[in-house]
Length: 126
Image (cartoon, rainbow, N blue to C red; front, side, top):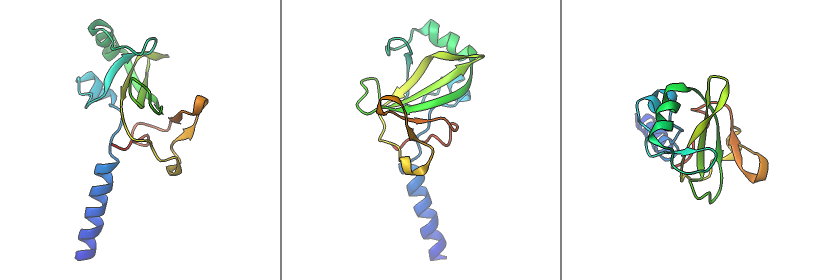
């Protein structure tokens, strides 16, 4: 019984310490960004209410996530697809660096870490 309790507590601790994911499409459509900020892909500035409304209507799927050390808009960055194109809106917030050893993240251009294997697999530490 004690062994089961230790395993359960360890799992809860690990998931709490490493449980941040990009907002899902459903969460985006419900305005539940859980701390992520909606930004314009061209400028990195906050999006207008009109652009966010359009994005929420057209967003179809999570595309990929970047982790960019010391990025002014936020180190964790989430990108999505709209119908047949990359969306003009992305979400960002400061997170700790993901673990490359997990195999979901790899070094991409300019030393950024990138994850393309799905929303849940692209977890970021809080």
